[in-house]
Image 1 (cartoon, rainbow, N blue to C red):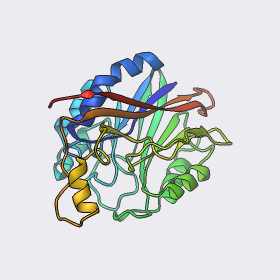
Image 2: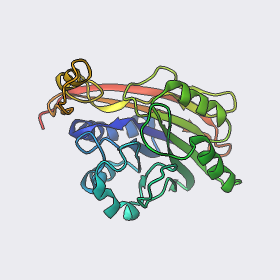
Image 3: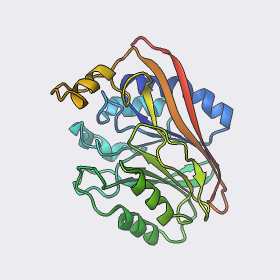
Image 4: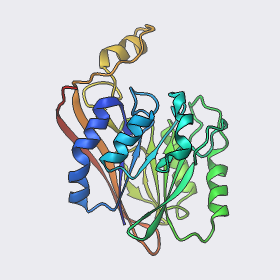
Length: 265
């Protein structure tokens, strides 16, 4: 079972980057199932229903979220009907939806779980470790591949989390930092792991946003909000995970990084 996982989709450029590359990547790597982190897909924060449908129509099978899960509060109006959307499992606020969902591709069950980390994060959440452990314990014996999107800031927390669940899930894919790490590997007991898959968005900005607005705020302390450059060059960061359908262990995991043309609107 070959799974393609797109890193955090940032704004219109990120959505376009996925749409412009998904078909050729699915064909090239013979992908069976596509996951994408969409928590930044709407103007850099949150996910509205229109953009959820846009990504599903483009060929994404499952969309995960993160700390900006409620940045567009209209999500509560559609999340219960969005069967391909997975919000963080361990959030304290009840917004509807599910934090772990079982899909099916080519007769094989694939569970996708979204978890929020705690280090340097502002959201009030239950323990990431005990939330996932409880989920696994409650579904003991389930015949399904299990992919976990661990949306967290600290690399150390992500690595520790990966080792804790090595052999208990098929793969743990880190998201949130928007910077792809060079450590895709299979852990000792068969769990695929990468600290952060990166992002899909503007290649020449900062974390997908217009670099000048980010510089003004982070370096010089202005109150400017981060803007998006809709004409910037498209970048795609993703990973391919090849999982054995019988053992549910990862056979191969590798990162992808692509640059496209600048796209006007």
